[in-house]
Amino acid sequence: MIRMIAPRLFSDSATRRAASSERLNREGIFSKLDIHFAFLMTRLSGEYDQNLFLASALVSRSAQEGNICLDLTEFSGKRLLEAEGSEPPVICPELVEWTDSLMQRRVVGREESACPMILDLKNRLYLRRFWEYEKNLADSILKRTGVKRSGIDESRIRALLNLLFPESGNANPDLQALAVLSAFLTSFCVISGG
Image 1 (spheres, rainbow, N blue to C red):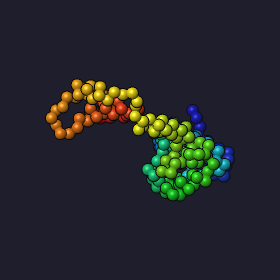
Image 2 (spheres, helix red, strand yellow):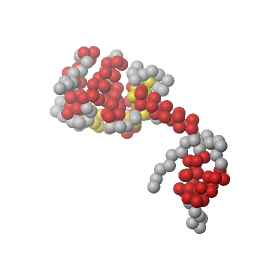
Image 3 (cartoon, rainbow, N blue to C red):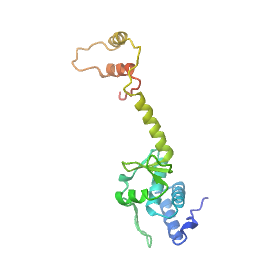
Image 4 (cartoon, helix red, strand yellow):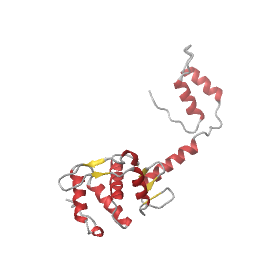
């Protein structure tokens, strides 16, 4: 069993923070992994910051849920936990306060930084490796889009399309035929739907 303990760096109110983190775990808001990651980020930043703690735990949770990033606008001002006894409520900060606070921490940076978390200009917080995956994929797709294939005999393609998709007399274009034509003529094509 993993015990939730606050780092010694925050000894002045470590007991309260540890209790709050245990409550966040107990209520199912964050997993123990989320909380440990959040404490690691606050420890690496050099000082405890509740805004960093919440953002770190949320981005960890988001990654575990299969998301590539955390949109801070979805959580800004959101109440995660109600007050309980002497425990105050846990509320995410407003967006401007949150992003300003995060950008003051050495574990959060923009794309060009070497920080473990990336905050982009659209207020999306990424774990660095997921940001790199997304950027590499986007760059690869952009490199392929708009590039026409060479050496394609368009007359043979049109003959094949006429065979596969005979004219129906309908004035509207056959979208399936257009999708096939696009796949033949470009280096990158996404076809969706049914």
